[in-house]
Length: 367
Ligand code: MG
Image 1 (tube, rainbow, N blue to C red):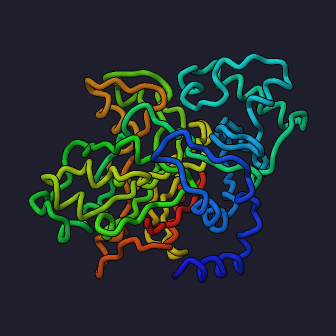
Image 2 (spheres, rainbow, N blue to C red):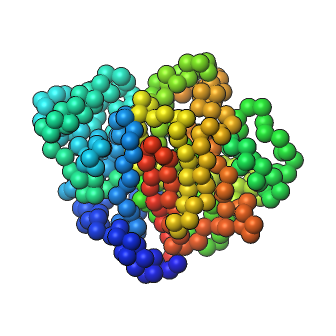
Image 3 (tube, protein in one colour):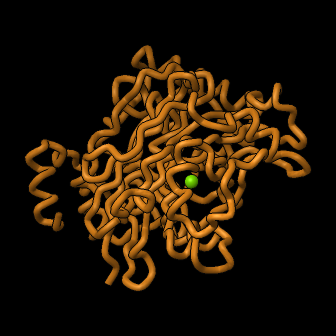
């Protein structure tokens, strides 16, 4: 679908009256995570109001509030409004225990900081704090500048492992490993919930989608026992481990890092839901391309579950607050389809983790 047609389609679908395109200021916290203004206009058109789910926990977002030129933290409430944490604390006369423009600062400040945010949430519930409609803010990646590479798990759904057996380059691997497959993605892959995914002729003809549940670490730990692993989880968010298959599988010795690490090939969001608000047994990971469902699997079908992943990853390796772990993608990826379905310019990728949230990204041809 070409861009004008897509725009008309979405206008007809009633998703255009969001006002996001007029949001002043553009976040430029990270070269890889910033968009050009033209991209922002189209992104605003394709962005529906993020669907609010019924999680009980806190929804913490990084965003641009109306009139702001720099990102700051917000608390997203069930009624579709968002509290500016800095303004909220000021109204309450409280000194925040963390920098209110940094999710990493909040995570590093630990339980006392989270308790402060809960206090703010309670006051917001009584209607005593100023809020913004969610449509008036521009949501950014909850962690726009990760402090280290994004940890990822490969082949973590049995069906996904099997669907690629006949078509991937490493045909020698015929059984799921006894331990999780780990790799990382560069920090330059981080992208916003509504950011565009670059399509570059000569580089990305085999770009593919991978919707995933991502874990956000909230406590420092090393050699974490599996039975204690959930104590180290701050919360969860949705993630897309966008990948260029040709580069991942056929170049660079079959090592995945390069094909997984193109700029902005890792959108995340729309916010982090604290762990107490997520029942993993009810979570489904879904991906839609141009509105057509391509992936849909439950957490229960994940091969190595979150506690095992944390236990294995932390063996001799220190996990710290703000670390991101993408837990693997369900079956239904494009390269394993017959015929293969790779991402094309103007495709709209929708990534959803039920109970947490969803976001959309458009594939944009780079000139
Ligand atoms: Mg993946």
